[in-house]
Length: 275
Image 1 (cartoon, rainbow, N blue to C red):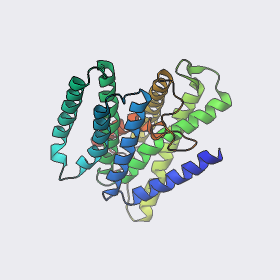
Image 2: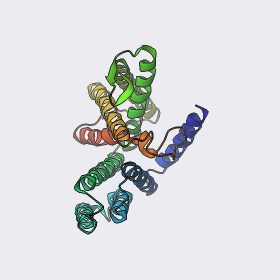
Image 3: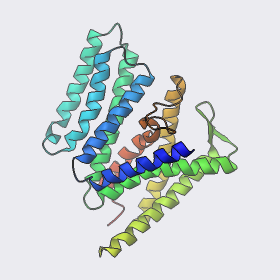
Image 4: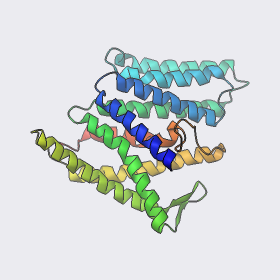
């Protein structure tokens, strides 16, 4: 437990520093590094290293995509996606004896999911006005719902949610995670409103939207966690990596964020929580 707490404290400190400099290229570098680590972990989990060229292409794609958020590269992002697909198909043609179609599709799907989802975080940061706080909410929601589900599940959990995938998860824990995340989400919005008022800026909160996002992000976090658990179960691994002592790999901590970030961006591009 001490190791988990120390790792969490260090992680939070690093995250705060990145957020402070989130208006610079620092956040692009941080997202690029995190994306590359997660792609490495998920491909390594399914032993997708036989075709080293494809393996490297996937990691480089994830590490490069965040920089296409910059104005100078953004116009070419579609070309970059096409180039990635072409390189992967070329590697399949060259290494068909080592890379079967199932692994090729696995590599394409997981690389695109992780890369595009992490790119969404940068897009959320770019939302005018409250982008930085929206990023904080996007990252915090899955962890709050997970913590809420854990404590409620340990306290009163009796009915298994998906015993064949994640034996420890309970229906009571899932419901508790959704409720706690929604409450914390709304309170966080109220706290942000009060903070902005101390700076002389009056904003209003769309409480209905905040509640909807609170519920939806918690549900998406559960789905993301279950998908990650299923991959780990089918590949016979406990954790995706060891880079975070006591927590596992980067993907073990951000698996739920991958499902939350795209939906958050989609919602916030239509209507914002703060006005």
